[in-house]
Amino acid sequence: MNIDHAKTIPLREILTLLNRKPKRTTQHKLWYLSPLRNEKTASFVVNTQCNSWYDFGEGVGGDVVNFVCAYLKSTKEAYTVVDALRWLRNMTGDDFHDYCVFRPAEPTDVQPALELRQSQPIENPGLINYLHQRRINIDIASKHLKQVKLYNANTGKFFVALGFPNELSGIELRNPYFKGCFKKKSFSFVRGKDPECQTVHVFEGMMDYLSIVTRRGKPVLKGDSIILHSLSCLKPALAYVQNYPYNVVCSWLDNDQSGHLASDHLQSICAHENQIQYYRMNGIYQPYKDVNEWHTAYRFAM
Image 1: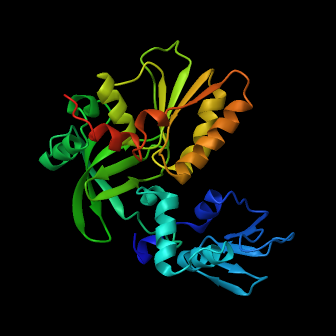
Image 2: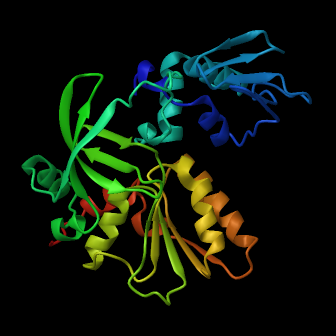
């Protein structure tokens, strides 16, 4: 992760990872109790429009990297820029681009940068090779993914990617060099093979889900599946967990700090629902970071 990448991570997402919630919200501003010191009145403000912060009690502010340096200093840890980037990488994992990446507000008449030009079955050799590298069965992947061709108005170039539809009519995009979303970012819901099954599986990424269905040799699991695509989509996905008659939730989240925090939150939600049993599946793929990393580490006939 470099400085430019780090600055695209929304400060509100970083504060969420630190279990900080805004005490007050105004237009484009979120007010928190300062994470840099103890206080009773919220004086730490995040400007969501320009992704900056200012602590009125300390009289300091800045961007994402400045904040992490200040936070590390307040916890008596090393706080150079290199330390801040390492901390961000550890907190957000390899999938930091999955967060709702900050972009300055644009006029409403500006067209989105990405334009969908084509959607078809997967046949691009590069995408097929990418799935092979991830050890994903092509036939199973084709049940969920499309090959999409998009035009980037900012660069004036076309590119192709694997597309996984989400619950807000957006498309989650993936190729060896790019991870992003066309239209609105959200989670994906996949109905299980058995409509009577009262189990739901929660996956962090599409490759994690495709790894498990590949290993089981079926395009869907017996129970339903939710693919978050980003931990920032966990909150809206919880409505599916709580409003459906599930009695078992199995989570397949990453073996990192942010994944563990999300698992703790999901476990807490299930604990308040007397009929829901919660199982962390992490033990299956430890010590690997995620399901797909574990899946690709073993020889597996497809």
